[in-house]
Every structure is written in structure tokens, then in C-alpha cells.
Length: 132
Image (cartoon, rainbow, N blue to C red; front, top):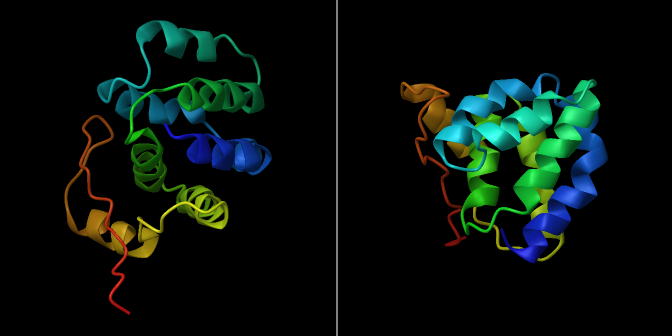
């Protein structure tokens, strides 16, 4: 994950932890992508409050050294019907100077047209058309 993406997550942490709900529903997808291991998922599960579980997940995700981790996390949020969090993260990333790579609305529409499962990555994030 790039520094700007980590900063976007850091800036949105309060919003995310207040709105996330059950963070464990994201685990199957995060594990299938290799972003969580059995150990890191257990580290999160031992936290008592959902607020603390979400914070711990964000700490772990911010340390992931994979280029696509931020955008895959946005896709996972969309799949889990947490589009408002995905939009907030994407907007914060753009405000910090990150590239406008993800069209959230187009991604939501594309995901609604295909069959997908939380257990498998689909890689459907649609890029913004910059020909305007």
C-alpha cells in the first residue's frame, strides 16, 4: 500500500470504525487475497468491541506491502454493502492528491450484474474515464 493510501485510511479511521459494523464479514475475502492470515484474523477477533476490531483491521491493512491492497479493500467494502465507506476512502485518497482511478458507481453497477462471492476476488474496480 502506498503512503498516500495509508494516509487516506488514517484520515478516515474514525468514520470507518463508527460505520463498519461487523468487520468479520470481510474476513473471507481478505484471507483469500492474502491480506489476512489465520493469525492476523485471530488477533482481530480477540478484540472485544467491534470498534476495536475495525481499528485493528485498519492497522493491519495499512502495513500490507501490496500495490493493489487499497483498491482491493475498496472493492471488498462495496461487495459487503459498505459503499459509503468505500466512497469516503476513495474521495479522501483523491483529496490527498491520489489518482482518480476508481469509479465507485460504475463498480457497484458492474458488481450488481455479475455473480460474485465474498470468498473469491473478482477484480471489477472500474477506472475513471479521463477523456472528458
